[in-house]
Length: 362
Image (cartoon, rainbow, N blue to C red; front, side, top):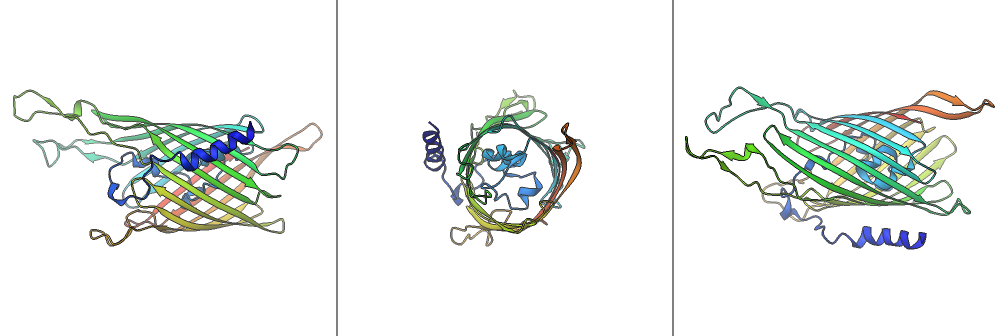
């Protein structure tokens, strides 16, 4: 049964994506809810989000839900980001992941995007009424992951599978749109020290979204009957991640992870990149990645790549022990840790994106 489930998972991830039309530049701008592509978590953002193979814990809810089961016991995190400085757009997120058993875990994630105050204009007051409004961009994710492993042979490869259901909400005072998205992922881990990892995730498969509300009504002629306008529906930005990573150990103190990742976007250009992370005693990590936007020939309207994030990303993490809990015999039962992550991603245009994450891990 386990063998057939694993084979089905890989088959679905690779061949069940026929609805995706990856890397099609002619479809750019046709999707909506692009906040689903924004990564609020600093550690994976330092990898340019190219972490489908090895991502774990609460961050996996944004990249590959199969990795949720990779945590120890419990993780709770708060993330904040300044998006495309100096746009004034900020990201706030809350992530929670909990291990139900040795093989299963679930997670909850919330994300809100604040685009600031916008001047309210009308047909009769095109220069502004003096009032302002602030759009709401919010999504909530519920996820579950399971790990298949051979209890009799701990060195055998392990398979993680996971799924996520995301509720999406966008709106202003008098017009809103909502939808539902699905993510699914697989990770394969092998080696005596779990040094080789391979991951595939399919993200943002979901319903069309459409704005509805009284804000779509207009009066074409003063004193005439109010006319309701039918807003066009739009898809959410689906994509496919395929990645691999390998850990190199130098004694017990130093680890270096190298990784590569390919992303097939349905509504923008495909992306490919590599990255590396150096960890000392699993307490301090620095990382860097480079992502390339795969261009489909010369663009007569834009002589540069179309995706905002290309080029370099940088990140660092620091992990500190807060306190220990002990067994009756004096041995340590668990350790509560504080993780602080920071990342910077180069963007074109604008001056890049900064992320900061604080996480409690038990």
